[in-house]
Image (cartoon, rainbow, N blue to C red; front, side, top):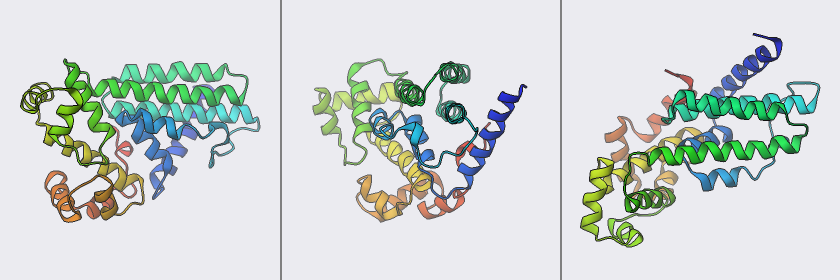
Length: 250
């Protein structure tokens, strides 16, 4: 391993450990949005200039080289999160290598900042497409997109059927056939996935999360969470306070 790669590797490990020690880190929340394929949210978060992002440490006396090292760290993190989310290992790391090489050839901080946006959205769109890989019909694909875009609201079968222009009972059967679970189960699972991320990566209380994700009540949220996850929201947060799923790669 040459000196440059060794430095990148050690800085990556150091940054990862800092992420895992942090009680709340917006960067981890960003990676979770990429992993879930939330293109809209990732585009919003990418509005901040990568070159002037708060908290970027000095990894080189040369500012441009320092930013390139940070870019490589970010690419590696994106690759690992997306692998965890179901992307093929070879595809994820090949994409990471591609963008790291592009960054290495960049001659300005502006180029790297723009490349960071392209890379982040590229990974996010691929994760969004991945979640629909088994879907064969347009109505179910549209229904899945609607669900992801409206997790903060109360979603009904009638809402979905109206959105995709299908009879509710027919959509219900079609959805179950292609997704393997009922519409209501799919919605609940996605809300719980989001709740888990919010418990780990944000400071929202369980009551706030319950309200944000439009559960009927906090008690219902806690009951469903305990039944499906095996612990209460508070217990889940405490047990994951210093350990994200990324901390235990398989």
